[in-house]
Image 1 (cartoon, rainbow, N blue to C red):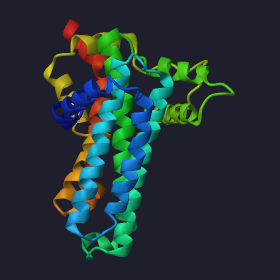
Image 2: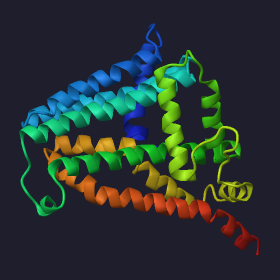
Image 3: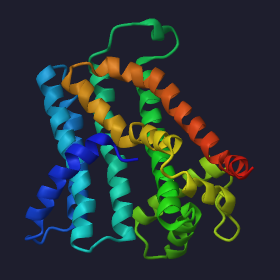
Image 4: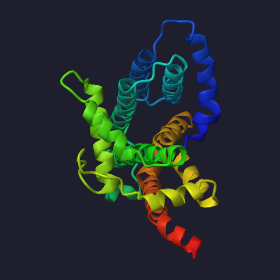
Length: 290
């Protein structure tokens, strides 16, 4: 479920950077905390109506995306991975998107786009907001289902509920803002896809034992591979990669219109197909036995 650009381009570069950083006192959290600064610079650059500034903004944001691969790899290499680090990384990702889109909103405030068929239905800000919301939905849903599928295929159980429960139980008076933000995002994921407000005492995963067994049997099936491939090109990183490409091609507005229309239809279709795949696991198992 990894973005192809991450797997084949950013992570190879990240591994090279990690090898260099292993000989330094630089920590994964320091790499994480510098990412929003690059995103803020990218957001500033895209406020200009000049292809060179837009391309520069794209390259700066791409550097942020490479660093986003570096921090996790560095944490594993230095054995410094932690729940707090994960929470900081999640918040840095959201800040990165916020800073980039703040620049995009300001760009079109200063340089309004031409009218089009959408103008009678949505304002410029409406198009941008819808594009941003579908990007957030991509990130939100792909992270949730990545944890679900990885825990099922690697450990034989759906750990989405247990992971959130442990995060909530670990909260205390000294817990950081990052930890609370991470728990809030987890609660929203549970509400969206399990259709209930998370209760640490009573909440259980909707993916039953029979479904888990069938999903494990189907791990290498064409349908499972299709679901994984769809999430790989539909997650938040894939969305940001497309935004960067529209900046490089000087087609920023066309890209935003596409995200607000075709992008919304796409991610909703992927979520619906994913739900059908999960709910039908038990039925497919019974048919296989019969």
